[in-house]
Image (tube, rainbow, N blue to C red; front, side):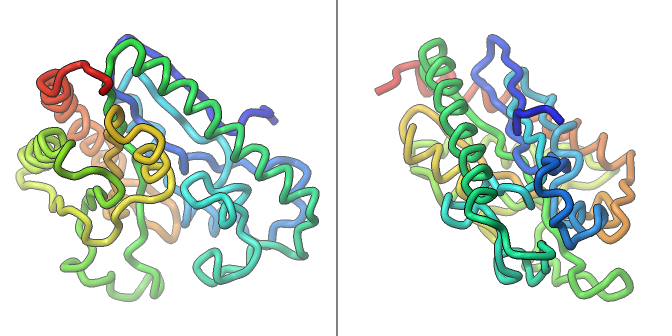
Length: 265
């Protein structure tokens, strides 16, 4: 297995798409310790976000499962050890050794160090950049044959902005939401709302702590309405439509970024 837990793609634009929960692989050392099936793991991962990330030339793609190390949680919570860390799931057949945990956390540290270098390079070129922090979330946790969770509290697209200076980045966030809602999604508009289900995870929080005035990271959570979250079977038409909807937002977001100016102050 590739020793890296993420892959970078670069281009000459100020837009980055991150799909840090897209990965499904587990390193060989810990695979025998897993109590979960591949289907159970996939249910909590973020499939298809890697495809959607191609809307930006700069991409950060997770290659390993969040069950190995979760790059969207604080470091002390990044390795799931108890069921309460993982939606009540028993992840491991036995307790992880300190050596295994240390190896996973080294991957975590290497990821954040690499992304920091990557962002510094982009900022040196563009002054300010925007990140699409792409995720998906479940809404049928009660079972495959049970009713989904209340749509009033589970928008099709949750935009998390709770980790940023919302006033500073308002033009970009508002333009993104407006353009995403305006997309003709099979004859209707997507239900796009802000900070209803999530306000942004550790990745966006870290971005705004490290680069508060130079990087705008929008945490974008798509409800798994485009797939069967229990079997993992996608509706390919909707997967492609979501990618197209995201693509349509990029021109406006870059335009708003340019209006903010290229000063890194």
